[in-house]
Image 1 (tube, helix red, strand yellow):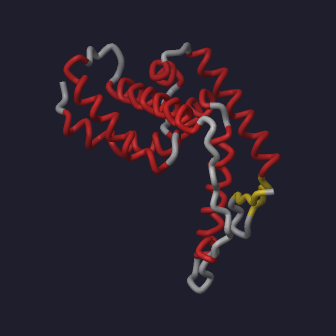
Image 2: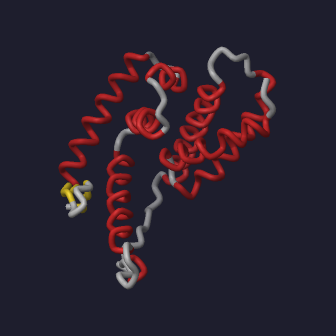
Length: 185
């Protein structure tokens, strides 16, 4: 059995990245700590029926799910205010080379992230585990406690929904370097 410190060093950045993609970035660090608190408390009872990474990602997924449910119940009936004042801080500083390109990439990532965030949770979760965390379908099935066929179906539906949403919400094009770029419609 491995010690907690080595597990934390290996998995903390991965779990933080996963949670950042799954939930709000502001909550990801706190939830990452919650995940590793649960890991440390349960490490002695880990039976090794699955791989360590599968077990940790399952804890992370369940923690994110619980957090989402808790957040929904807190927000029920409350209005959310969005800051869309078009502040000058949001504009690129074109005085430095590459900043316009960096700004465009940041906007493109924000656009894609917005589309992914609109996917139903079960599609978003399998897509993140597959495409960003690079888990196999069988590992995703173990993490989410669903069948491999269900994983395949959800991945197919998630990719289809993502493609349709991207086509309807974004203008995709190639820049002068033949890199794919997008602008919101």
